[in-house]
Length: 105
Image 1: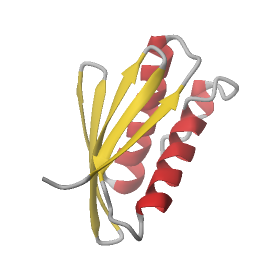
Image 2 (image 1 turned 180 degrees about the horizontal axis):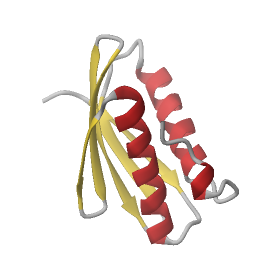
Image 3 (image 1 turned 90 degrees about the horizontal axis):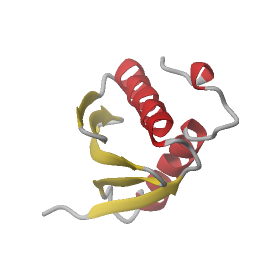
């Protein structure tokens, strides 16, 4: 079994708003990077090929946070991948940014 990268991103949103924002982020990945996106309840699975690497993971939206579990890209890219995911999810979960202003392309 491949190693897993795990992150917890807290949010202060109503659960349905958090789900809508993660849906917007998934739409961004689908449009920008041709990602394969699927939903099961409040868990989004994303798989994308980027810079020659296959990247995949799940994001489960709970009432107080988003729990991300993705394939660990290895020692050399682990911190960079974790920082990128944290920044991207924090941006989409920021209540100061209206949902309509979040990029989807």
